Image (cartoon, rainbow, N blue to C red; front, side, top):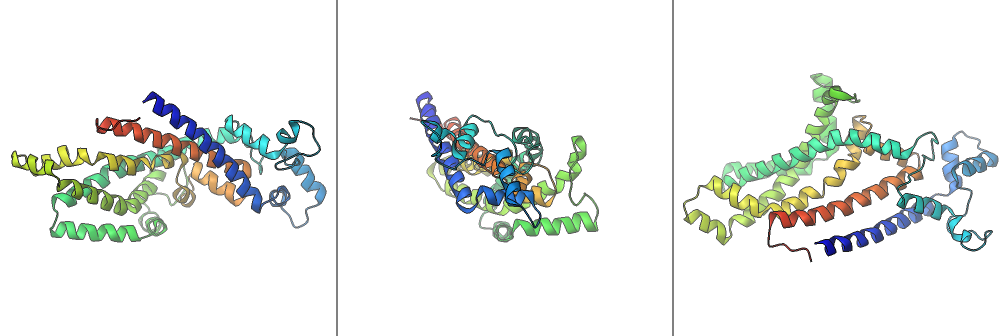
Length: 327
């Protein structure tokens, strides 16, 4: 396993370098430092002197890829690409382009805690509720409960998460006034602001997850070991929970594990609509303001989380199934 993890680390490093370079190329293929300066300075009349001053203050006065005015290695190192990319690989995120007072590293640490308060309950409840609902449908398979349960899953899967947000805010916040319509508070007061987005996010994902898990369980329930367990006289509940669920854990881990990066990165849609100051809202603000320093940082962190998550999923496979070997 050690050799496998070392190889994954090497592959992950190459992927991070590729993602970093690709993000840089894409951003500056549609934007120039002058465009970024005009947007951040604002106003109808922006002089070239203001643009140059903005670029010098933020280090965008250098060439993008190659500095012909320098000698030796400075031709490469005295460029925007080198200064922005190498610092990122060293986890030095720097400061926001739009607001120099904003330290990106500090913002990430602060906002990650807020995003975890929202995304961690969603992640845990999603796995428990989706698995339980899917097991119930399999237990009552070929019955009306199973039929209407699948219909409900398809309906929930077909509805956009924006619909759940709009209806939920109108019904629970505006009409019933049970929870605030948006906002956030620290400490225990955060519960009243987070409970509605948690429930709505759970509903928006329940249909697709439960339908997927149901298909996995139905595939397992027709195998020989299940018939052998029934022949031994085991009840259907024991067969489902002790045998079927255990042998379907690998695809469940794969599906649930793919959501782990969102646990740390936050939900773009829900944080924006509910005014929750997490990493998801941070990304939306950066994209709107064309803040490349924040955008590149969040893309980099997202790539790190996906690489780490895939490695953890592979390790989890060996825990739930001793036949899996990481070679």
